[in-house]
Image (cartoon, rainbow, N blue to C red):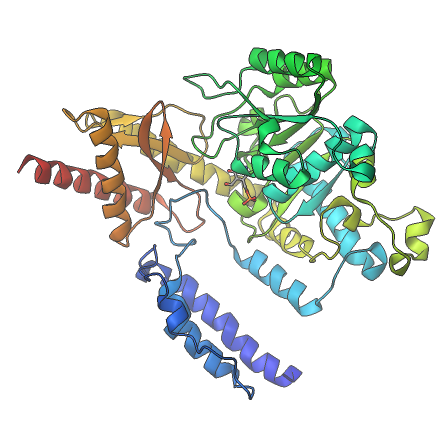
Length: 484
Ligand code: PLP
């Protein structure tokens, strides 16, 4: 493709994306494609001769779009949001256009140094403690995902716990990891990948009401394991759990970890970015204490297209110690000088994308003010929805911290628990089949609940009101059908 052809098709692609943004509400939120349908529409063999890009764009409409679930649709309330925004898309496009592979400082100094500055900006926007900033022993880095960040944190913690033995000899002792029943599954997966194994992942009690990790039980488990000869490696506390946005008591957990000399990782994948708002900075409670690593995802609720996770460590030495390998072909003067950061030593893979460009674009376009406004809109809309649910005698609301998630269920008066859960699941399927909204579910307090996560940039008051109307109507209709 010549630059001239690129210019022509590039304009078409940008127009296509802008059109998509304008008409996104005309699509059913959840794709109606049946398993194998997209696959069957695609030729089984690659073309022998190159095709024009018009053909790709035509198939995008014909084949790909019917198989797309529209995450940026204002009626998308499933999982957690995965925000996209104009500046992030353009930043990603520029990254693709530059085609930089930033594994070393030397392979593109700007890729490294823009990341260092941008991640420090983000730390400042979130008001993270100085110990995580790059001008001391700590520092931040962009990872692909919170899952990747958790694995990196575990490897750094292992390195610190056994002085690098695991890196040299493999796991030779019983190393243990501590989570709660509410911790994201990526921690258990990361433990498996790190060689700790799920049998050595200990599950700390979480309180029945708050679903927050119980520090006293953590303390007891750590003491028990150490007495039995295990080497506790890492505790993961969560700020904003996936199921219900529960918040673990990080200050108390930090004190327990300090007493036992265990690495504390705080997973704030979804809720951490809420700290752009001063009134929500309590999400940082405890970070100035005994927290070793902290992770949050601008790719969830901070307007930055997937993938963009921010990981900070209070001490970068164990991280680099765990992950640095220097083969001859990567040796270079800048690395040897010790004056530069090579972020390949801060992650699993060698190669790295220029992700900082999109985060930098987002921060510059919106400014602190715009980012705060986005988070505040999500929080306000969720608060409105929660108040409507609480005021409706036919529904039950789960109390939880004030982010963008609301969990609730119809009461289904007269139905035994098991049937009520099945009815809630059926309601969710009916709603999702409508094409107007997309919700997911969770289980808390032994009950199935609908999870409505608000935070797509396109979602406004009218969308949340319409979704709530729809939920009430559909629940009433379902109850009436049952009565017939
Ligand atoms: N941690 C929490 C609390 C999450 O909610 C999620 C995803 O929703 C993750 C980790 C995993 O995030 P990622 O997809 O970035 O790996």
